[in-house]
Length: 235
Image (cartoon, rainbow, N blue to C red; front, side, top):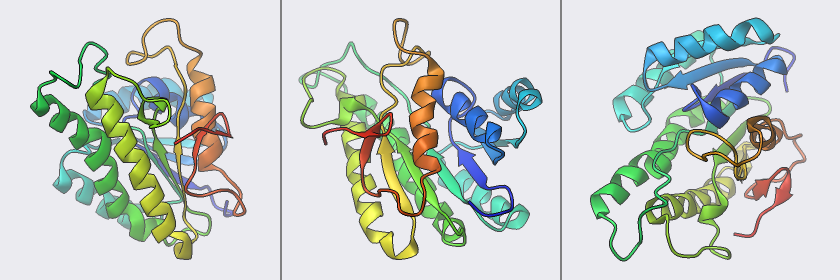
């Protein structure tokens, strides 16, 4: 990364893997823009985390389903920092384990796609001009093995389809952005004990570490890949 503190933005960062990803990046000295749908959640999270890290944590409101909100934040980041080095598309909803593809309400699927796919897509588009200004730009889409076509089975239809689509977006962006030196990868954190993942999963620090690995890859690192703990996952 550059000699100045890298500027990293993490969506959905007020809890779970997003929160821990923001903490780990700040622990590496990054200036982290910690985003949440409700500003009070972002502010509370920053107040909790900031005393324990050498980097800077800054709270921002961001609803990735609101195009105006995303555009406004991109404009604000441009005004205040002029660049973005790392974008982590972490915001996601609806791990719908009780649903089945044969019967799920398609309105629920649309709502899930609006956050998990289109939210990440519009955020990437809005911040690409700032990523292009970075010397070492990185874009990380937080995905899931639920989106792996090779391992996919029934159940969890909205979430699984949304993550498969996010993986496809990762491939598209990685190929189109090679000329801009932007490394774009999807990361599966694994089964992690969070509000979404539920009890029984691994520690949140373990899941976030794979995301931070992708966010801090060297310039010679991979792009267009799907990883868990730094190792490839089958598409």
